[in-house]
Amino acid sequence: MPNFATQLKQEIARLARKELRKELEGLKKASTQYRSEIAALKRSVAALEKQLARSGRQAARQAKPEADAETGAGLRFSAKGLASQRKRLALSAAEFGRLLGVSAQTVYNWETRKTRPQASQLPAIASVKRMGKKQARALLADPAE
Image 1: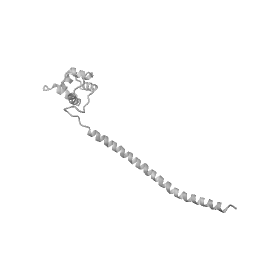
Image 2: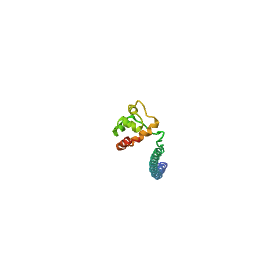
Image 3: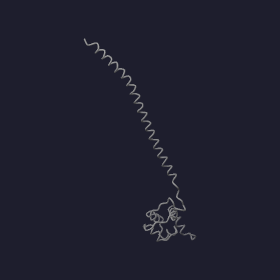
Image 4: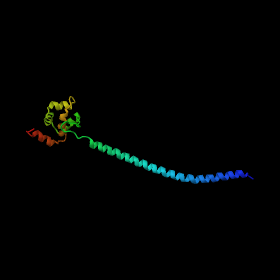
């Protein structure tokens, strides 16, 4: 016959494991619930960060100063773009120069990257870029120009 103390010890261990299982089950459920809540919160934070970045980019885009028509601030010049614009309008360098108020040689120098236009000339170049063929021809035909 086993020792009474050993039997008592085994029974206490069994009851302790049974009680621990009950406690651990509740803790496991709570832990699982907390993990899912944390994951949902992380997704929410990520979505909010994306939205904040997007609104920051939009605000930066809207806050960019508009190109100043008198100083030419904010306008960029590209020799390749100027040449393609002149070809799109089907104008010679002399005609393009007349539209801009410069010589044909100046237009040629800009296109070959020998020189760059002054900042005061950039608004005129930008306005010609918005023109169509008919409008450019009409301006060239106008004797007031």
